[in-house]
Amino acid sequence: MSVRTLCLAILNFEDATGYEIRKQSTEGKYRYFFDASYGSIYPTLARLEAEGLVTVREEAQSGKPARKVYSITPAGRAAFIAALSEPVARDTFRSPFLLVAMCADQVGPGAVRNAIDARLGYLREELGLMETMQGECPNEATRFILDYGRTCVAHDIAFLESNRARLEEIATGPTKDLPQAAE
Image (tube, rainbow, N blue to C red; front, side, top):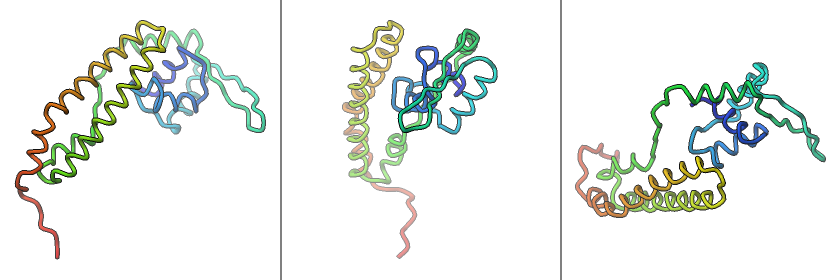
């Protein structure tokens, strides 16, 4: 997915400012698809406007500069559907937790316990957020993806809970091939 497709996706469902698009892509319901920075969103919106895929209107705000609100055009909606019809790229998954797990025998049991606890806390928070969104969602397709996400997160939690002792045991083992600290 690209920033272009993300912007069109959000605007497909509702008009938004660049700030709102950024917030939705990092904290809101679109954060599960693609992360976009302000530095990429605003140039993308300008290109989309130049191509006639979005329109922009200014809305006055009391005591603040006018805000630019973007709307998708019919041509933008067609471009969005065309982008979704292209072959889907592989999902990208990055996890700082897994780096700690990979080095469990080097970081020790305390760091591993803390990492597991933090990961479980994050996953439970994420699960709760998805359950809240599920209750507020009138769209059947969105409910499907929330079910998918909840299932994945629930399996992550179950795996960590049932395999925690295994990783903690690895962390208590002897360290190997570690550089010696300079004295």
